[in-house]
Image (spheres, helix red, strand yellow):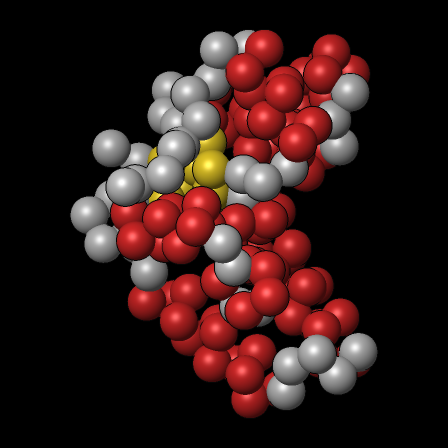
Length: 139
């Protein structure tokens, strides 16, 4: 079964001080499951790495290595279909008071009827309200 993994979970894999039992269990689940992410995920990942490099939090080599690590994981990036998906995101974003980014993850989980892995409290709340399953600890 696939799951939708947002950047709050995926980027914790890069930074030891952000890793926790939940993010590690999601990573472990990818040994048998596939993650699906909206196209915005790729931009979020790269943006976090660029900011971390600029702030001296990680080196360019570590950022490159993390990208290669992500590329080895079973993560499928969904295409964005303009303008239909934009209209859906706009309507759902208004209804949930989420950002376009959060709405993209929520909409994908709804469309695929699969669980969502996130640490974003507002996204968790909206997902629960709409009946989206939340990926729980693997153990």
